[in-house]
Amino acid sequence: MGANTSKISSTYKIGGLLDAYGAITYGDGVTPEPITDIKASGQGNSINLSWTQTADSKGMPVYGALVIYGKDRQAVETATAQSHPGCELYAHEIDMPVGETVNCSVTGLEFSAQYYCKVINYTYGMAYSSPTEVLDVSTTENHAPQMQLMLGEQPFAENVISLYAYE
Image (cartoon, rainbow, N blue to C red):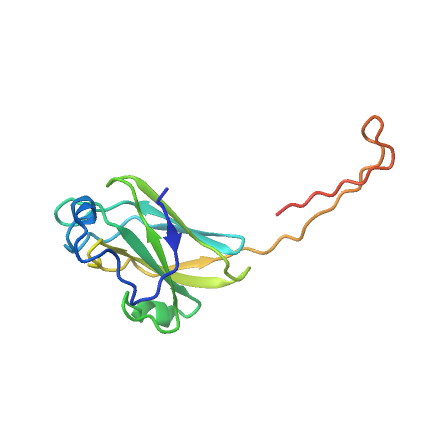
């Protein structure tokens, strides 16, 4: 239930030079704990990830997570938060206390495709944790819409055609 998700470039900076609220709420750039309990699944053209919200060494919750993903396992394995050639980067801001379950979805992928991904936590001051292990996840097939023709099933509805779309 993290707030505000978006794609960002690897050079994007979070926060201003003097952001007291951000520094108090999310810490000062101390290296965050890595994610250790990540789970991944594919559904349709999306990858769904979940893990437990971690903190930095001072106990402050991490500000967000970077999902590095792609179809080339080697590229994902060698990618970092600052350099990720051959991969895509998805930033997920996390606004929740330490210990809560974080849910994150990367959408708009190819159907029935194999993807590799890893996640790196980051603090408000842009300090990065070590990455998770590389996860192997497959998106599922696209289910074509189904149409049903219903004639005269309702009173006063002689010759009505109803269309239903299903995933």
